[in-house]
Length: 381
Figure 1: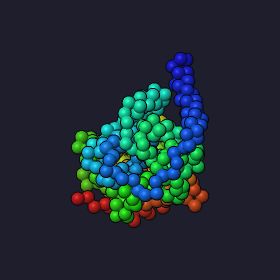
Figure 2: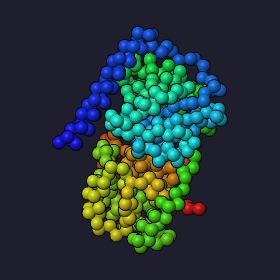
Figure 3: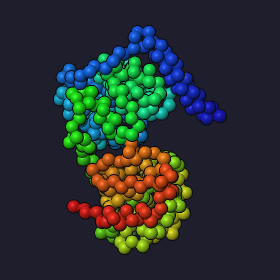
Figure 4: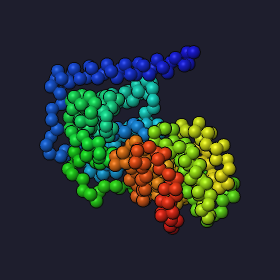
């Protein structure tokens, strides 16, 4: 009983602490006159030596922020130090793209929250940027304030606690447009430093590292399943845990049957973190599929090397879609979420399919198969 109660109690304490913070912070900031209005001109970077970056959320959120962080790093002095606060799920991605940055990993719960709090109050930053967009996040707003950075950049208009956001982000951005892509929202924040972003600077993800051990492991899985060296591989992600964003497993089974008829095609089944239950449900349903290899875990290095070998990956609106789009072509099936805001933006072609009623299952397997045939075999150098 105690083991079950304790996390629940900690969660209630965390939520209560956030509510108390909102009330106290809003009152205090009103008392001292708030943060005022941001400077009209872009901010100079010559004196910035320590910059805190906040992006403690899901895989896709960090992926679409990579171009903005890379651009910001290019605008800072060479001796400036970046500190990136990322979630447990995103720590691998953070290390891939920003190996020179100091990485703080934040997990869920009251104790990780306190550890992050201790780190923040023990250091001082010249600037803090909260990349969380809409709606306003009390957690990252608190951390921005705790950083004691004289320059605090974030979205001042998000549709929730805007008064508090305007007080915290003294050099923030007041553009609220739900139609903007998440990458564009991140770039708006970076524009506060040295001005507008030129179009030719957008979309620079940089190369994803090659993971030799993970590649060898994947090739071993293929050999164990008797897959020929020159086989055409197509990836699918039928285990997405978020129901609204998920093309149903029944739809994936229909697609599997269509792929069985395609000469030389072998299917790679991908699962993300926390999707073990959905994976256990799918495997017996697809037991008749003769040409399918299942990745045994949600290890991102393994997923990247598998996707790199695939000529395309079929998936829903998910972090897996954003990660796979960095190394191969993707066909992404959208439901209620807006592709204009969340479509992957990797360097490879992205095909978005969305039913007219905003339901994933309104997309027919035949439509997906048509798009895969239109893409054709990928060229592998």
